[in-house]
Image 1 (cartoon, rainbow, N blue to C red):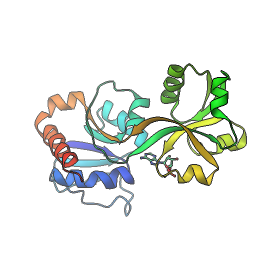
Image 2 (cartoon, rainbow, N blue to C red):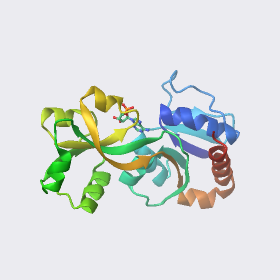
Image 3 (cartoon, rainbow, N blue to C red):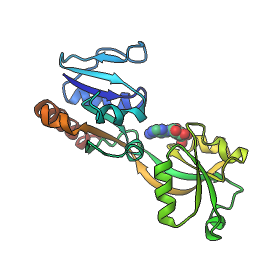
Image 4 (cartoon, rainbow, N blue to C red):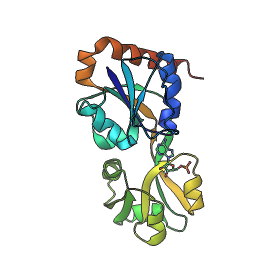
Amino acid sequence: MITLALSKGRIFDETLPMLAAAGIEVTEDPEKSRKLILGTNQPDVRVVLVRPSDVPTYVQWGGADIGVTGLDTMIEHGNAGLYLPLDLKIAGCRMSVAARADFDYAHAVRQGSRLKIATKFVGIARDFFAIKGVHVDLIKLYGSMELAPLTGLADAIVDIVSTGNTLRANNLVEVEHIMEISARLVVNQAALKLKREPIRRIIDAFASAVATKP
Ligand code: AMP
């Protein structure tokens, strides 16, 4: 049995055509059912639905053999026991620093001020500001990061930006670009050894689907 960990929404929707390229069709619609294990047209392949940030944990501990999740999640989790063979070039977005339009971020950085940064991505933020030599207090949040600069909780946030609509709606502006993010295929290293042939087949099919993507 090959178990593939996905999360509902964009990752699930954009992974479906890649699965199709591997001859795998998910037989249930996750939006229409509360099931967490979905069957496929292949009796030995199943999909488990987990939160994006749990995908690396499932794959690392063998609850799933393969998964798809964002590079941001992988960096925060760390790569122990995991093999990341492929950038799937889906669910593209960027990791940025954003602040209120009336906060002079560049000036604060130049002055060497200690900045309060709210984020879910504590590891990425810590490394980014350490490399820049900027002193920061990191405030861990689990969501609605945009609220932090508006309420005085933080000077700026580190968050994912796609269209920029969420920032604009909350009068925030991007002040630094940290990295481009896209979804990665993540594979359990032990499973790759034990189930080499079927897993290789899936990786190769995904790789050709990425290569031929318009
Ligand atoms: P947007 O308003 O399009 O810039 O989207 C920003 C919000 O959507 C952020 O708060 C993110 O949490 C979320 N988001 C957008 N794209 C992604 C993605 N590829 N992966 C994870 N979260 C995303």
